[in-house]
Image 1: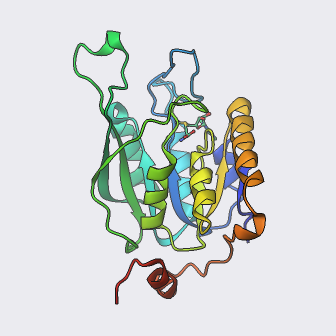
Image 2: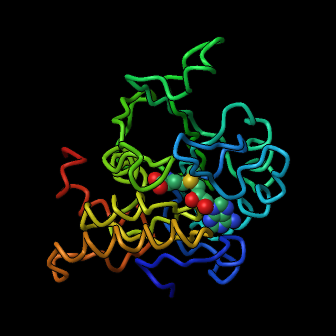
Length: 250
Ligand SMILES: C[S@@+](CC[C@H](N)C(=O)[O-])C[C@H]1O[C@@H](n2cnc3c(N)ncnc32)[C@H](O)[C@@H]1O
């Protein structure tokens, strides 16, 4: 049994070593892109140095081990270092299933950097352990709403994360995000009322931002209403619940 709906202020490689094999039902994560990112306010991201990608293989190997059989991982990544990410995913054992493009109405690279092109998309790979089936078939290209990056310099939109979780995680499942940042993945699970989260954040400052964000949300919610609980790990047995969710018409 694992602790659900927790974020640990820890290195995820150390933290995941304490999780049993096959103990989470989906991975949704946004690791450092290896691009030395710094925003205008000077905020940066730990382990984002292009010169050090040593953490990639151990991190994804642990993710593969703790992910349940026949389950999905959705991983945002740095496209200019795609070879390093792909190498780590394959080494860990993941199958490469698909690729998402999230198009933006704005360019995310600063003015001085626009001489080659404007960067108007984010991207993520859909990976699998075994041979899962989705709960909803999503388009490979979807829109992206700007978050304002209030909580984190690379903050992801909650509604988009929830769409991905809804398509790839069984009801009541645990969504692991080892690189939690400001807890956007957790916020998506909380918003859903039907998915659990588990994660790690190394940086003390982002960890406390994440906890404040969650606590503020939970204070607004009737805790009894927040039902994420047991899962039997079986997509097939969850079908009845999915019918109720309106995913299957039969
Ligand atoms: C790209 S950001 C994630 C942002 C997040 N998606 C959000 O919406 O706030 C990656 C995060 O991983 C954290 N991180 C880097 N290395 C880590 C590690 N080994 N273990 C846990 N967290 C780590 C960084 O501090 C950073 O906050």
